[in-house]
Image 1 (tube, rainbow, N blue to C red):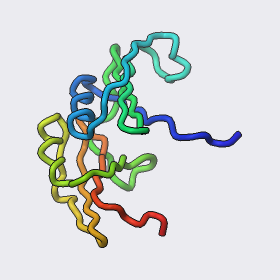
Image 2 (image 1 turned 45 degrees about the vertical axis):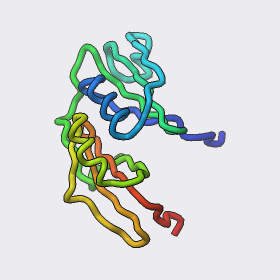
Image 3 (image 1 turned 180 degrees about the vertical axis):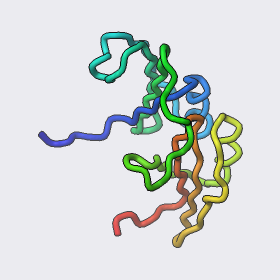
Image 4 (image 1 turned 120 degrees about the horizontal axis):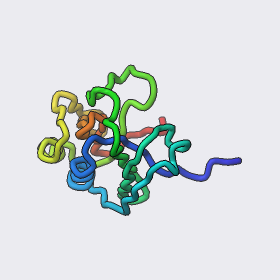
Length: 147
């Protein structure tokens, strides 16, 4: 069976409304829908309890925010090291990186201005973290990722 396409990224959040504002106001996503679930998805989610799923969209990219009603998210909410196993960050192409630093702070995230780097070819990058510590790379310009 061949892979058809990428569907979405799921992010567990502490505060659904704060995270929604961050992704809509800072990164330009829009809310598609919200749905509440309970025991019918225990096997799928590999967790007990009820939760709200909120799907956000920007162009063809989807982010599913997951907010559990009966339990707090595990982990300390700090951004994980880039050397940690698994997904280390999300990267979005943006018009200008500097504009996002203040917006991130205004909407519950954290700006990391010390990570701002200017690369060859007019490419600039900077990292933010969302309200739950998810590392987000913002990249202005078009790097040659093909080699």
